[in-house]
Length: 64
Image 1: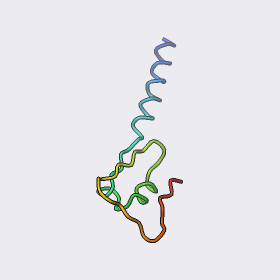
Image 2 (image 1 turned 135 degrees about the horizontal axis):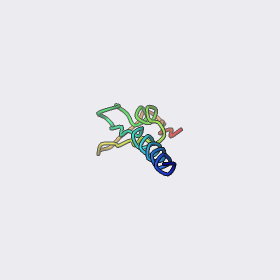
Image 3 (image 1 turned 90 degrees about the vertical axis):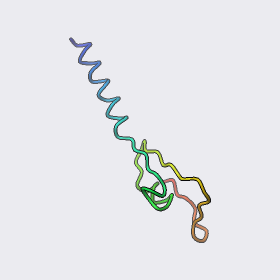
Image 4 (image 1 turned 60 degrees about the horizontal axis):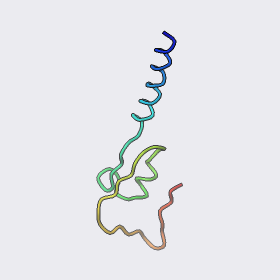
């Protein structure tokens, strides 16, 4: 019984970690790469559409 409970707890923790990850798409979810990075949390994936992306001035992406 203890082994079953330990397995259940382990599976729940693994599933909880997997469920919390999200895919954030640029530009459909956020208009800029920086906006998508700012909205992302640990474990999320930011996917950028093909093309040339430019910023304004000397701005660079801040990965925080």
